[in-house]
Length: 336
Image: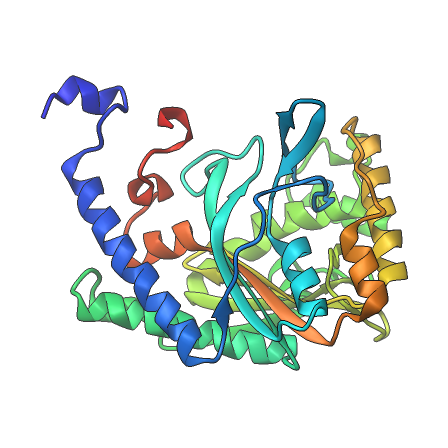
């Protein structure tokens, strides 16, 4: 093999080719797990006139003549339309696209494993995610890709509020904006008072600097019941204060998946999409159409369901005992 062609990305090194064969076997095993649990696989368009609206995520555009379509950041909108149409337990393994994402655990084009089940709540989906991870890691151990001790003995579960009180020494739900900003300043973010950030910005700073390093020590941990202002498309439970019924799974400090008790109220979805557009506009980002096919489908009736999006590249990295998603990609973004 010409080593210069490997360095410039034209060819991939032999160890990556071995990783890709293992990745294919893992993907096949994951599909069998979904089949065993009564899910069936679907395919939805990668190009759509609509896109998930999120202040933190930038979709990529595709132009077909005078038509503008968006490469999907997630198949969420289309899959929920299928659920509203009567598909009760579905999964999809597809490419998703997010601009401005790169690094050891990111690639602008990545593989997403996403699924929905009618009748499940988000706690039931935490149970299923744990089962799926144990099955995937056990498969890797049986194939001698990773050592026996790579399988976590316990998948911890801790609420967002409990994690903040325990590791950041402040309430994420009841502390005032000013108290959060002052606390972040005291912990080392010296310019945060001048920036006057949004509440989410401060919570994300504290999460990244105080909470996530402690979660990494736990190995595998579900963080659940996020603040209501971080609900995305999850249902908000009217506790005092309210919380969003969603979770994220961290394994060895890496965020692996995101799950929701799905929002089923079309009026509330419309309000949140407009709110996200306003936050995008405040950051100087473009706004997107809020009157979507998903809202129309929800107006016809979206049944109670729970859904999860899991980064398959990260799962493959974990199951092969690697440190970078680049080692499980055929061609990373810069070589594509």
